[in-house]
Length: 155
Ligand code: 4NP
Image 1 (cartoon, helix red, strand yellow):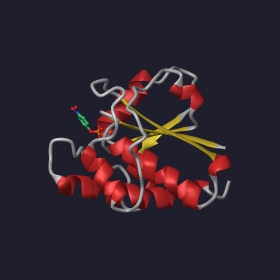
Image 2 (cartoon, helix red, strand yellow):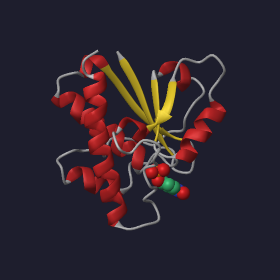
Image 3 (cartoon, rainbow, N blue to C red):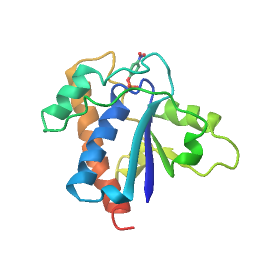
Image 4 (tube, rainbow, N blue to C red):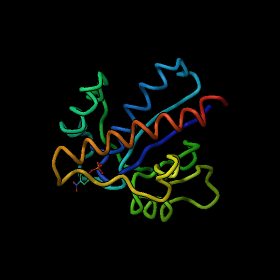
């Protein structure tokens, strides 16, 4: 069983995209009994909100519905409840490392460390930009999802 938590700042653009795309890929591969998937934000401005309409539109254009997701904050318990916590950018990673309780089990890493050729890179925050930023987010999420499933789908 792989318990995976995707984390960004607001939990309305990048991490819900990863949540929804990874969830669909797991369903398509018929691996639902092997994964538990969730997303959260390090910030708390958007609690309870559905994903940004621009993020929803990118997913919907590929037949993936993420409208049911709701923003929540990262909790200290998450570091024991999840095996993998994937940070969308370097600031999210630093914030997660600062809040990780000593001795907790989760492996905290940068999301793009799991995409060959993009190690150490951040998924750019698209919130204050245009549609192009959301397209970039979607493409990076799609490629990383494929790579993660190759890595984790076997065991
Ligand atoms: P996310 O994008 O971290 O990918 O969900 C953002 C959403 C909201 C804000 C920043 C980033 N904000 O400042 O409200």
